[in-house]
Length: 178
Image 1 (spheres, one colour):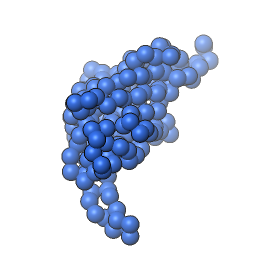
Image 2: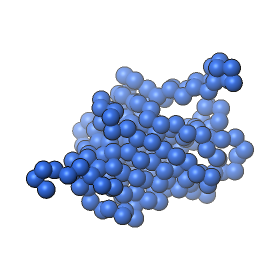
Image 3: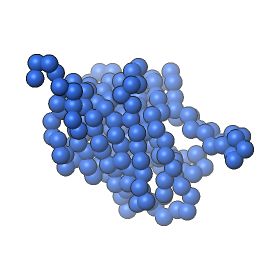
């Protein structure tokens, strides 16, 4: 692609031990990275990556959302990818977003972050301009204004993969006409 995500493992002395590049045909940007437990019971920590993409062909595996939202070109959706400890396999990868875009690819001031708890649940915080961002048990059902914070939680499934267990808008920018 035009730009891809790169994850590199360094030794304690700062030497590159392994590096992996992944992405689609357009632009990918890594927004956050975390190490966390393997919910399948493995002893090695997994690598959790939050990104943003404008690629219609970003690699997915057991996705919650298989395609970039919207009709026409991908507006810029979030991606959540889980890599094994050796950086040799994508264990899970999904789009997460709506039809107007999340974290616009050329304007990174909106940012995003993720955290992983001891049970392997993934919490994502980002910004969206989409009124149709995926929601699940939302505390705020509708977007307020042009740009809204979003909070989403992905729960590991017993057989592998994840499900969206919680997702909501949070706050929003008030328009002067509101």
